[in-house]
Length: 438
Image 1 (cartoon, rainbow, N blue to C red):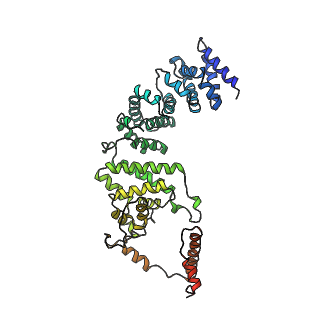
Image 2 (cartoon, rainbow, N blue to C red):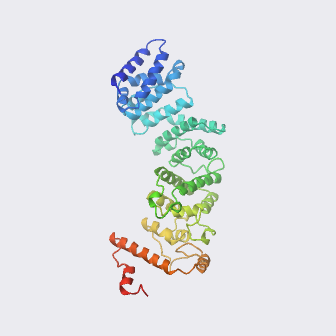
Image 3 (cartoon, rainbow, N blue to C red):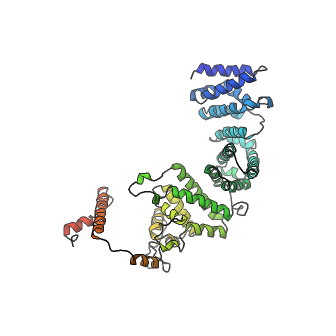
């Protein structure tokens, strides 16, 4: 990039603003500048001198100049993205702007960058009534999308940018009461009924995580249908990190996609918030989908293809945030009662979470433990199903016994080598004492 070219374009645009009949050349210069502004050095040149003021006049024009305003606004966005010093200049500029989806998209991205840092930008935006503008736009978007069978990508990207801006603004408690939550939840329901990218749904969820939702449990807002859709999304996401889908010999093949994990965390946190304020019907729905039911107890828990089985497998994944968030959800579905939690999902699944969180609990082998009738509290499986399974279990062959012994021997060797265990390897002890041959 030649710095002189950038300065020359800015000077041409500046002089062109002062004379008539410059529109066609002006547009060509803006397109050239748009190519340069992807470079940090060019962004600093534009953002710290006359270039930003010139772009501001072009980006927010009168009706005659609207044709080139979008590209100029995109230049402003890239400049502000790459050169922080230009953001203060933007705050000082004022102009009336007419809205269409292209312009709304670019203008919203500019406002979003202004809100990424705490400071006078956020204060000024609040004073200028940014929340009233956002509320009006959310209502408009909800009405517009509800009345259209198909949504363009630009429509969705525009609404998503507004949601990102809203998320930045409501991170502070004093702003949450200024948001009109109703159209936001209606947008959430709309996002389920159209074949669109999932990110739109999660931008809405991220906003709702920071907003009061207790007053919105009705058929138009957070209904059983809405919660069913959220649970279906969770089912799909958990399938993406499901250890059952991968070979035990290839742990590195497990999908550790950060985006999927972030979405699971957001969705589970939102479901916990819904549970906190839910109606009895919605609570019953969450329990029926997320906790093991009688049918699940016919087999070893966590082995099926239901959402509850996937949730149990998820609390064993090597990603602590996902593991803990789902464990908390299941614990709260059991009224935050340790014994009820153990009886529901089995001591094997529950004990690790309870111990790690410092939650006191009674072991199933204690006389004080209140075990459910007909259920093995360790595995969570019904005793009858366990007896049936054992009756059909074939006797191990000598080869199978030897393979199991070899696996145990290697496992203990590794544990001793890593100083995890200090006890003597029982398999080696059996070999040395001659008991193994017996």
